[in-house]
Amino acid sequence: MTRPGIKGILFDLDGTLFDHRGAADAGITAWVAGRFPGHPRLEEAAAVWAALEGPYLAMWQAGRCSVEEQRRLRLAALCAELAVPVPGDLDEAYAGFAELYRRHWAAFPDVAGALAGLGGYALGVLTNGTLPMQEEKVRTIGLAGLVGPVLTGEVLGGHFKPAPACYTGAAAALGLAPEEVLLVGDDVENDVTGPAVTGMRSVWLDRLAAGPPPGGFPRITSLSELPRLVAR
Image 1 (cartoon, one colour):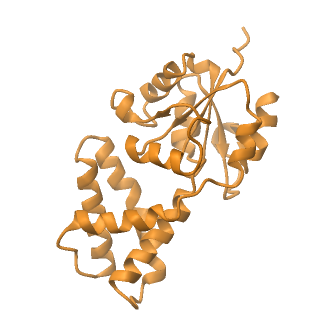
Image 2 (cartoon, one colour):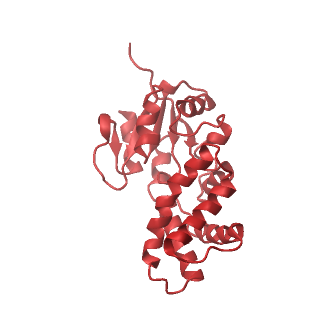
Image 3 (cartoon, one colour):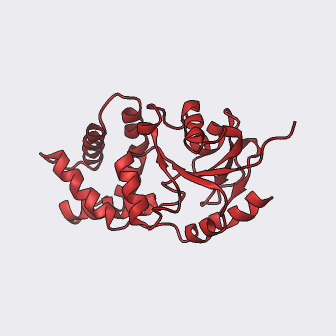
């Protein structure tokens, strides 16, 4: 039996459509420089912040803390790593970082052209971020109305990538079966191998040219390659 054709495409957001790493790196570097001028490890701050992101977001996704608490914990952990005083008001301090982060929000330059070449498909965004912030990102970078609904665990029964129910729920939100949907993203576990267990197809967006993913999944290094790949 042949597999049904692709009728819908889901995109990861951070690292796929939206340059999260670039904005976060610039934001946290500016935050540390503003609070601790001349810090000897300023150039390391972005890497430390990036390393803390996954573990603390996972705590929130697992229901072990609120999204606000994970932000406080992550910021306190950054300060501990850099050996600087922890702010007395962590919510206010995080808001300062968030403002600097927002100043650098941008879509990757290959996004507009790729979306223009995907007419006729049901589109959506499947992301593990918080719904209000991810929707704000989509609006700010000019993709509102172009990429369909923004779907995250908060609207998919508490299921975040790579939980199978996240992918099946996202497909259902597009009115499709998992086998009719293609997921495109930069994270191998969340966006490539994870959806495969549900029958959903996937493409790895390897922006850093790291090499072929495990299992022989399709791989592209730019979204500009996607329309031609889908057509095949």
